[in-house]
Image 1 (cartoon, rainbow, N blue to C red):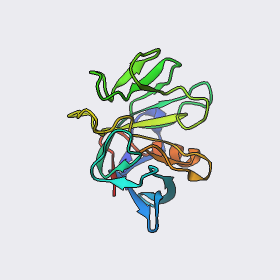
Image 2: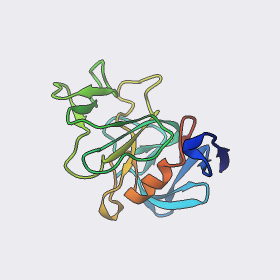
Image 3: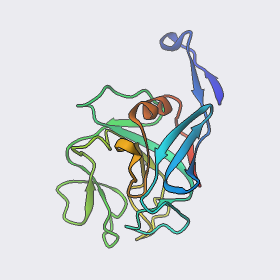
Image 4: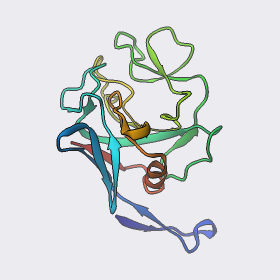
Length: 189
């Protein structure tokens, strides 16, 4: 990890640790569980129900192999304080959604609900999306059917499989967010 010295009255006496990438690897013999390493941090993570894939397709339940930029984060302000992070950050709203309809022109983009085509609602009753980090997966360029809503988010109890995302415990997510910013990448595989 690199140390970045900050100047100014709001940061006197503090240093911010920055690391260029998070590394995610599947556990041997368990395709839906993995380890996420970030500098000296090494934590468990959940992976897609179909494990890792090099050929991501919509609905396959697999986590894509590759290197993806962390683009920004959203959080549930009604459930927790604003996380500390260098990433662009905004509070989720009840009308936030993500289009997963490969036939729609807004495929794999943020949408407002209600929304007619197939979509995922980001404002959830469970806590999986209390913090969401958007990964640059199938966004530039966007290929229809190439997978949508690939996020880094909060894990279910017991690290049950995701639908293709990478997920960690809430306290690990907060620790990671403190040390990431523009330019940070997630290497999966």
